[in-house]
Length: 313
View (spheres, one colour):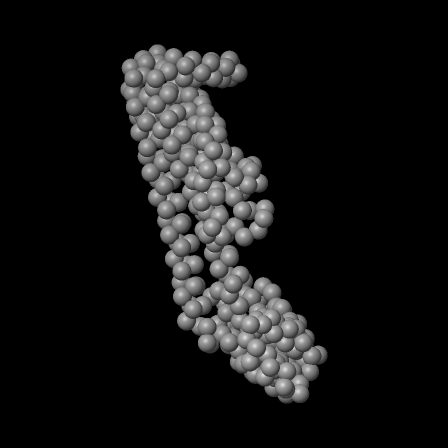
């Protein structure tokens, strides 16, 4: 009996979808726009995350050591810093490497290079470039470097300067921008989901409105709520599936056309991620699941809620 009723529900849902062609078309169009907007939010979220990560990667704290600092002590310092939970990466630059970098940076400044050549020895000390996992953690790292724990690593002081406090205002501003951007994106996501549910629900409710008498009649003859709701839920799922297919198909030309627009802004710095189209292709499975899942849930849930209103006889 269960399988018989299930088959009838599925068949009724398919018949209802094709019988009410105009209503189904309207519902599919509305849901396609909704799913396209949700998918677009995924792309904007990816762009935002990538650009914020690019900004984070450009921020670091540099520790400059005295020219007399032994390399073993600096490497010991590096090992301790790498063990801190806030630290993502520590890069060591030797005195020789610092000199090569300095010469390359001032290759057009002959006076500076001549003055450097007149010195008997390398005036530059080694340094460590420290990247934190989050920009808000740089102050804690800087406080560690200025505190007693850092002084106890080696017998004699070897740190000449820590540049965090010179860059503190810029780092604090960047932290504020990242935090507000993430909160804004979350708020937009929640708002769009609420609007999407309301639009889809009202559209499907209008589609079911014409069948209200049929629903009441079925209840009067003793049909169960599941038997009444089933065909409409199946129809709602069909709305979601077809809308998801159309939305996913639309993403291809849109990402192809608009991908080069974002390239000059360097949101994607790697070769594999220089266009929205490549991002869409590389992450198609995740986008597919998100859009299809959202379409099915929206269609089924909206149909369930819309029919529920007419079940009370």
